[in-house]
Length: 79
Image (cartoon, rainbow, N blue to C red; front, side, top):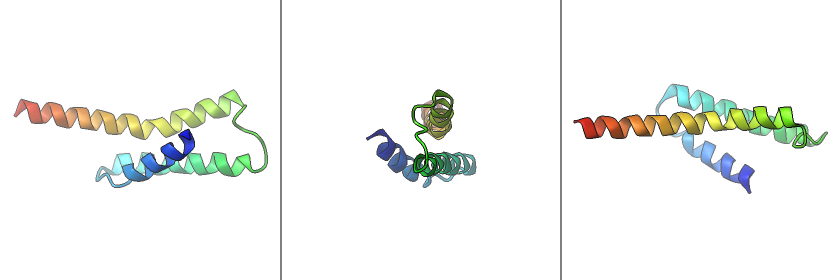
């Protein structure tokens, strides 16, 4: 499922050496854990505000990692 893929992918991003990316990855993992924990007591997946904030928070590390990969490729091609 999407949640399992997101969790595994975020764990893989923790191996990155960039401290900013690691910090954002930890935040995304905390958001994932918080939504699961809150889901034990109420159904948060149907609340659009919670879902949008959750999706925004867990996609930030993936966006930053992609930007870093693109910059590394451009730098490599420039040399």
